[in-house]
Length: 99
Image 1 (tube, helix red, strand yellow):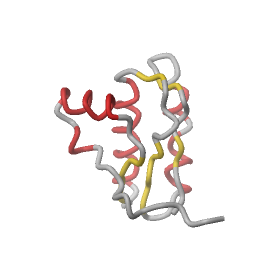
Image 2 (cartoon, one colour):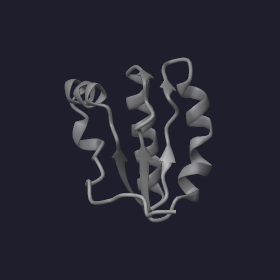
Image 3 (cartoon, rainbow, N blue to C red):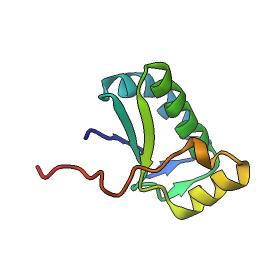
Image 4 (cartoon, rainbow, N blue to C red):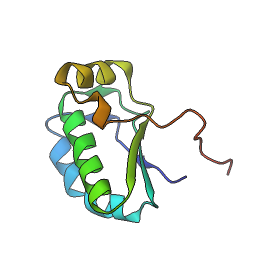
């Protein structure tokens, strides 16, 4: 399974640059677009906006979308905004194959 890896910092300042590069990254993914949020260490609500844009682009391309490794505090923030169901987590059984 290929992953679209989020950077370690995804704040208001960093989000626009990442969103600009998002379209080709989503298009390069197979039918299942999985955003790997495991590296996120510094983020704000802009990270949610990036994930929602990734989801929008994936669905527009006829692909599925899910997130792997979403930090608990970002999951809680998504819940506060009422959008947690739009950012589904990848089932734990989906892991990267050994290289």
